[in-house]
Image (cartoon, rainbow, N blue to C red; front, side):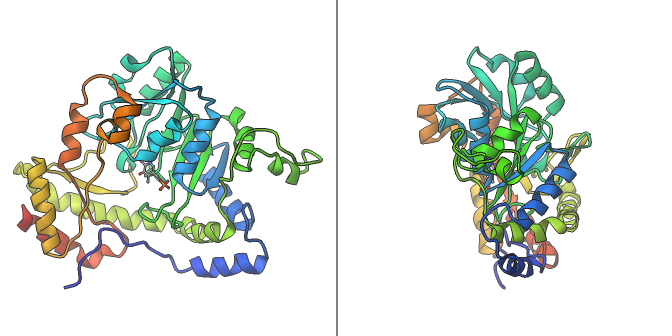
Length: 375
Ligand SMILES: *Cc1c(COP(=O)(O)O)cnc(C)c1O
């Protein structure tokens, strides 16, 4: 039997046609017709003041770090249980990640532990919406407002998810999406910055265009285009945008199919949770998720290692993540944590992700059978 891959990128069928159109249009660099379509779709579907495609979520987070005007030594409160880019984008500005523990139910930043970690150097709170399930944003926004802090949402996994009806990435001052091939809506490598605070919109465009006012020039708002600020090249070319547009057109369809797979895992594994053999993901009231990920929590690192190996023997590829950033070699030297990190340390050892991709339907029973046997 063929092995079941952990991830398999889904194509809607129109990607190559749109790429051919981009070529026919004679515009392959950034900000052509397909980029404009993607921007409009993101702005309409999220309500963001400005959406800007980037090369990656990492690039969008780097732009956010520039927009936050961090000075060396400024502090950014974030979870340690996250992808390395969440921290690196800010460390590159000389800022210091300050990690607080995660909630045991959603594995998201524990909002009740944020306030105690705030110091006079704190500038940013950075919630990561793990598995496309929202952080407790009302509380986080309220704390930020009271302390005059910027909120940057790492919504890399959060496209099409909502918190109390509001799209993830559109709630803080800034939000970052990923279109990496392992995410729900993909472009290979790709991302977007959502600018929700209108005061940051103009500077975001400039930073993305190498520190020039090129966007204003093309809109006829200034009569020459020149170097006005720091910046870099953060915009993708039209080939990427054309691919991405085909995906955005089918975002509802992709999300619905993923949700059906997620719901099937969740229903089938309920009896195993009732028997105390694993723990299933928790989605709080008011959070509509996007089925980015299905994970289970096992009893121990040893058991996880064993289950992973047995699944692989049966041709089912599962993965785990993350090495908590506060315990990674670079993190130990360049960050600190506030308070105990018990949930981060223990949950990251016990988490196992099951395959979830559009097209898995015919083989999902095989995954579930292998899991039951492995347990
Ligand atoms: C995938 C991911 C990123 C990075 O996204 P890229 O587009 O690969 O740069 C950042 N943060 C989180 C939480 C992610 O899951």
